[in-house]
Amino acid sequence: MARDYYELLGVSRSANQDEIKRAYRRLARKYHPDVNKEAGAEETFKEINRAYEVLSEPEVRARYDRFGEAGVSGAGAGGFQDMGDMGGFADIFESFFGGFGGGVGQSGGGRRRGPTRGDDLRLDLKLEFKEAIFGGEKEIKISHLETCGTCSGSGAKPGTRPKTCGTCSGSGQVRRTTRTPFGSFAQVSPCPTCSGSGEVVEDRCETCGGSGHRQENKKLKITIPAGVDNGTRLRVSNEGDTGQKGGPAGDLYVYLFVTEDASFRRDGINVLSDLKITYLQAILGAKIEVETVDGPVKMDIPSGTQPGTVLTLENRGVPRLGNPVSRGDHLLTIQVQIPTRLNQGERELVEKLAEMRGDLVSKGGGIEGFLGGLFRG
Image 1 (cartoon, rainbow, N blue to C red):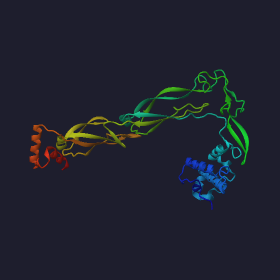
Image 2: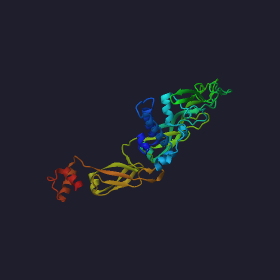
Image 3: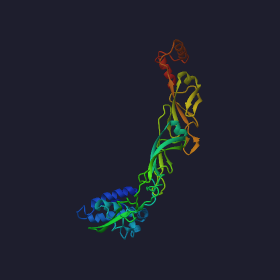
Image 4: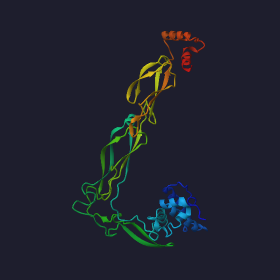
């Protein structure tokens, strides 16, 4: 009975393609017959190859997950030719034999290059707390590759054109055959003369030095959506490096990092802050002005408010990302400031209050003890 392919490679059934490939490479190096001379190593190597052959192809893997070996009994029966560019198998041969892969399925790495998409770029952008909450327009500076305006990306001096490479006859690749214990293998690699492009530039563009592109600095205005948070990623299309040979430009990815605020904190779409009030405002209640992300707002403090009480200002929080009409709340935690010193008049009034409540100052630990007792009881 065939061993479980996941068990053979030592990966979980939920492993992604990168994990499967890494496991295969590690085991193939360990059990390759040219490296491991122990009995059974060659058989294990074949089993590992079979496991990778099945699990590296999403459709074949799906059949294997559903039906087991019976669902893939014909998969890859003709060898590794059915695996396209052979994935990790070609990588293993490259590490052992310097890239010989043609006898088992030619490597596709040396083909003449046509239009190629440009590289994506990353920019880290810091935002103030309120900028993240309300969003808006932000100007940024980037440095990226742009197509040379002098040669229009050809790399050739104006009035001239690139010529077909004489080394590879325009194919962009060179090929040689080498005999190994496994048979004859063809090594296909990018042409060293034209670097795989199939063309050479004899008269280089003076502006870009023949590369066809230049590093340029650029200012952009991007829109920050309301409600973004730490780690939010924005994609700006076509603002990465320019493509090669007329290929599309890459994208710019802007990662947002929000600075801390001295007054406000954030919990999801709610804003948190502390509100300090006097002991008299806590006892009697008051209408006071509090600071919010929208600016000052009048708020009622109920009489008898205790320290640690959380009061809510509805719809004064963070706009919901993608739906700025919906906002969270502003939650204020009350901190009562109990004075450490009282003037004579204040002391007499507090003592009179203590007597009216039937609380003896001497038993309450002094005025401060009495005030503290008001909020504990």
